[in-house]
Every structure is written in C-alpha cells, then in structure tokens.
Length: 333
Length: 193
Image (cartoon, rainbow over all chains, first blue to last red; front, side):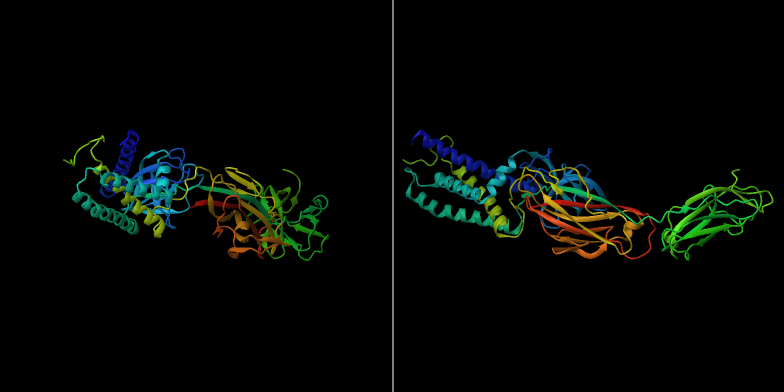
C-alpha cells in the first residue's frame, strides 16, 4: 500500500468516524439534555447571530425566560422563528412572548404562547452553512458515499482476512447499514430528531401618510361696525351669508369663552337659515342682568339644522352692561 | 498467520471502530432526508441561508429604512359627505438576496373624521375616476379605515411589485367642518421561507 493510499484511507476513516460520532452525540445530547442545534437562515439576528451561524439551544421552562433572551419558537405557519424576547406577559406555567429580530424595526406581529421554549445558549459562526450543505441532496449523497467508503475500508476484504471472517462481514455489514438507515428514517419521519433548521426571519415595515379634512365652513364676513347707537338699548351685528346651506349660531360669552349664565335675557340663538346666499344676517342682542360685565359674542357657522357641524366661532367685540342693566354697549371697559 | 489486530501499515488499528462510528452519520442523514424531503414535518426546511436584507419600499423609494412616505397622491382634503377618492401606491420588494416576503396592509386615522372614513383596498387594481377597480379585493369593501388590518394575500418575490389601490370614502353624515385626520397606512412585511 502506497503512502498516498494509506493517507487517503485514514482520512476517510477519520472523517467518517468524527462526523458519525458528532451526529450520534448531538442526537444523544438532544434526547438527554434537550439541546437543539439551530441554523440561522437569515441575518435578522445580526450581529449577534449572522446568517449561517449555528446556534445551540436548550429547552427551558417559561418561568426562566427573561427579556433579552434569544429563543426559538414555532409560529402559526409551522416555521421555526428565532428572535429576541422584547416583552413577556406571564401567566402561570406559560408565558406570552413578543419577539423581535435584532435588525428588525418592528416586533413579530405574532405573539407566542409557550410553556417551555428553546433558548439559544451560544452560536458558532458559519457552522450552519456546513450543516445546511450536509442536509442538501448533494450533501446527503456525499455523506452516504463517505460512510460506505469507511465501511468498506474498515470491513472490506483484506489480503490477510480469513475466509470465515470475511463471509461474516459480508452479511453483517449490509444488515447493519440497512438497520441504521432505517433507524434514521424512522427518527425523521416521527419528528424525533432533535435538530432544527430555523428561519430567524426578517421583517420590515413602511408607512404612507396623508391627511384628510372636511370642507371649511363659510367665513363670517361682518358688514359694517357694530351698531352701538346710544339711542337704542340693543346691540345689532350683521354679516353676509356666503353659503345658502349654512345657518349661524350666536352666543354671548364671558371673555374666556364660557357661555354667560342667566344674562342677558336671550344669551344665544340660531339665525340665518332663511337668508338667501349673499343676503345679510342680523342679530339684535337685548340687555338683561345688571352690573358692569365684560362679554363677547361668538358666531358659529353650521349646516342648517346640524349643530354638530359647528366649528370654531368668529368672535366679535367686547361688551358690557352699563350700570342699571338696561343698556348694552360696545364701549371697551 | 493472519492477525486481526495488526496495525500493519495503518496508524490506529484497522479502522473498524471508526467505520462503525461513521455509520452514526447514516442515522442523522436518514433523519434529515426523511424529514426534509418525504414528510411535511418542516423540521429541516434546509432552505437557502441568506445574508441579504429585507426591504419593502413604497412608490419609487429604493431601500429606505425606516420608511415613512408622504403620500401626496392620495389627496383627501375637503371631503364632503359621500365623497370618494382613490390612488395607487406601488409596494415593491427591493430586498438584497433571495428574500420573499408576505405583508399586511394596515390603516389608522385620527379624530372623529378618521373614525368615520371607509376604505376599500384592491391589490393590483387601478383608479377609474375616483374609485378603485380591477385586481383583488383585500378585506371587505368600504371597511372602517381606522383599524383596517388585512393580509395583502400574496407574497412578493425580489424585484416584484404590487399596485395597491386605496379608495377612501367619507360616508354621508354630519361631521364638524374643518375637521382633519392624520391617516397612516402601514405595510409590515415578514420574510417567508
């Protein structure tokens, strides 16, 4: 046997042996310690776990979880999601988790109710690529060839074999291989294998904004100065009706905008429904009450009969009652 | 005299132990292959590992993050009772790498006016006059705009785009004049395997 051949033989045996042992160990660790290896399929947990990292997760009860832990859950679509906990709503044995990828701007829209969950303990960069390649059809084929080569090298006919041992191996080895493959197939079919390929998926969000508004009411356009003739006790104000579908609500107010109470005699009213477009709307406010008071009058436009369409009023003048309470005035106090 | 344990020419025995251990690989491979290729148990989807980045962009934006688009195209000022307005907003997958995503269409609106507004969303639709036509209706027609939250109903592969036609109606009814409402349409996207 040449040196090259010997080296090749050793390489195949060692590679097969080490990979096979790792495989068996991870299966054992999965069953005994609830450890699950996870492949990060996207960069949504970058830079803690880049795409292609292999995370090692261990199942822990919900009570042990803290905000900031990276956990792996299965979402409603049946896909594994590995993201960081941003909020925990505890509820006895279970907890409702809100998760978010580190590079994602928004949390996952699903909340996950869990009683126990796989928490990522550490990650190995790039190792996921290797595992992913091994799970591909080509990887499986290469693995199969590796195992067959190792078995052939380990148990194949050798010059120094005795005939009986070789014959035994010819029966035992294929039987063993078939048994092992069957075991693996059963594990996969029943979902008992403790491995998982996780999609630590990305999210993104964009918003479009606009503003809606309802039409403005017609402007109240005063016509002329306030009529404060000394000869009449009433005060008269008037304005143009600029929109036929509107009427006007007027109200005497304290200057802080609250309606007056009990004075003057008629402190508010609605007018202008019958006035044609372009016509003049007038209000005559009669005195009432007593003492010096400072008031304002507010005029609101509203759709006819629909007080709810009132908006901001137009404020006119400053008022007061002359001593004796029988006169209104537009004289500033 | 043949020897069973003669390490003649090899460094660590004949290699039977290693050959046996390598068979362990078959257990794993059997499990992976069965799970990934012959059952619907999606334990190892074994999909491509993707070191790209997701980008859902609106209108002509390209890879904007975070993205808030002032949608002047949907002009909703001076809405009289019964008025309807419509506009199309393209939603594009500008992700780096092979990232396909699904997304939802959400809407919120402030104030009394916002509470009254109704919305009709058509994926792949266009504007005819002041209404959306064609495409696929997303959610119900004339749904309440505030709180609208529906899946778009189709995923976007990289470079693909949907024309999202949004139609907003102010129903008949009394509302204060000069009311305003800030309207926000949100498009949260999630990568799909």
